[in-house]
Length: 469
Image (cartoon, rainbow, N blue to C red; front, side, top):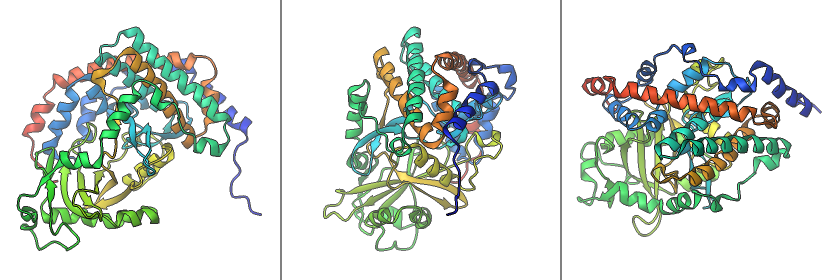
């Protein structure tokens, strides 16, 4: 019988983690030397705006300028560059790439259960595991500052996150492979602030999205959409009862010709789904298409939403909203020896998401539209995340507890938990070093945020030439 691969022995995997301590001692994880990072942060931001919709770039800058945490959400290119200027462990796993407090949240699984996991993978890539740990730790510092939580409580939350991450990595290292693959967190409903997050997710139904994003079609036939092109296919919104609202620049209905190009991209996308999910999707009929601005880091990238209806007898009783979201290369790719290893950025995101998540969106897939790469998924199906405006020391601590377990699980599923656990060790040396880094990087983020607020980026981007979607 042929042997196709020979996995490393447990002792060899441990040895890899211990050798990484020589490459980067745990205490050195605290290091942040600004002089080693000569790249201008605002120039990095400006460069990341290439191939974005020009008239939306000010929206991104304005969202980043709102607060240091808002800046941090949109500044992955800056942090990727800063991390690349410092040594790393060489212990590689799939990372989220944009691990921060608002990129973990609740969403609906295929069986209807609400689950809590990492839920944004635009920057996902195979990279040193500590990149995610440092970014999430920094985000907890910034979130705590924004919520007015005192310094000792912020630092306590970060240390608790790190202790949980390290403790669970040791547990995952000792688990049988398939037990790790299906490991679920069962204590979610009891911990602050999870009851509020799950309550918000329960309310975030497709029907609620229908009311928020669409309105009755005053013409009864969607005439504004169809007059700009030939008659639509019978299967596409022939008798519309609801259409997308128009609230430019954040939400704009497309003309029939524009909508047709977006819908044509669903053909290749369908083939990225499993057969039974293709069957479910084929029962939905597209009704209307719009351009939508989402998030902070993604603002300016092309993002389309498709309102579909199921075969229910009453219009509006079975809505499905698909999001077709442009994906650029991960900000980390340029600093890694082999880049992302993917020629299609939507495919990169899908593979990274499936590697790290316990359960993923049943309609998760990818496609290409006008030469650009796109991710396809459901839009906000029972999604909910942390409310930074209503946080206390206790809720931040509870959230940090879950963040540690969730991030550890994602890294363990996609990488080698034995090597990571061996590197982390049983002491708090790694924890203290990452806390020191997070404090320093939160201070740097506030400094960079002030640079943005005092710069002419907002003014110059408003006066620049527009681009077609």
